[in-house]
Length: 441
Image 1 (cartoon, helix red, strand yellow):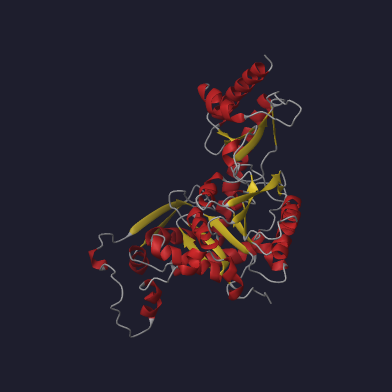
Image 2 (cartoon, rainbow, N blue to C red):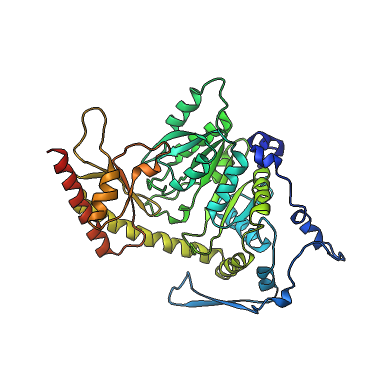
């Protein structure tokens, strides 16, 4: 029997904003409309007879046989639901599909103290989770380097960003333990840890099983919530079996409820469709939904309907086949980029081949180490010299919570063909050689 933390446990984890926010006076009553015999005068929903769409037809490649196409027609009640306002947490059909997916992928069953909320991409629900849990000036644990897209969320709240070290095996639990065990006695400990455990953006690292288990144990010991941002979970292409997620590993703990998980369909179905979802403790999801109710009412019903129609036509087996094909595609892309790095940047850069995602994180060997730990700075080299040679990448400093110099660079390999990769890395080689020559003059 899975034991979930009680709802009252989460009161200290909610931000002042979340505690002060009141439920939507209209949306909170929507479920009452479902009672048989009720004549609703409640909502200002437009009359569906005025909507011009009568059907939508989707044509998709079969995930089992890519040479075959599947045609799915959305009409009748399904289309009616897609064209009208819907529940704040998401359309029931899509939510139920997610429950089934999470049981298959992570062993988490419905009714174990967690639920689902659909967002307009995972970034949407991450932002709302941060607003629901973090107050101005709070200390927040973030892996370092960290996904640059979340930094403005914390910076706008003037958070004290506590950098947890990472390496090729993921977040360093020893660094996290040291931070927490040496925390100032009178200062409130952080309530959340933000991490991307698979194919991390920017480092490409994937956290090992041991590291994940140690971080989970620390979450229980020091009482914080893990924000598990996992958009590259289905882009894992390592040789070893995929490690369990934090959401799955929680089942080994005495109780569940310290993981708030974020999934995205952007990397595997369409980035433009903007569908992601959060799964986690009911009180935290309720706070996220209350934000949604006043911010944008709901994730668009039509995109939810189209997404569900496609996924339902595929079935879970089809979805698994599709994601396996996607991960194989990115493995091939990774191999091409890794080959170019070995040919052109051996001795000029250091890196570890990623096992998931779409990024390489490499350290430029600029020959400027002065013996005091200064490794050189990729900022000016990448932003100016490399760009002048016609190659664009991201200097690592943008991924450092507190900024500063770093010799690291992030390169995305998802879109380039083999010839483009070869030329881009050649141009990087010329840029590094020029910088090294300048450093020795």
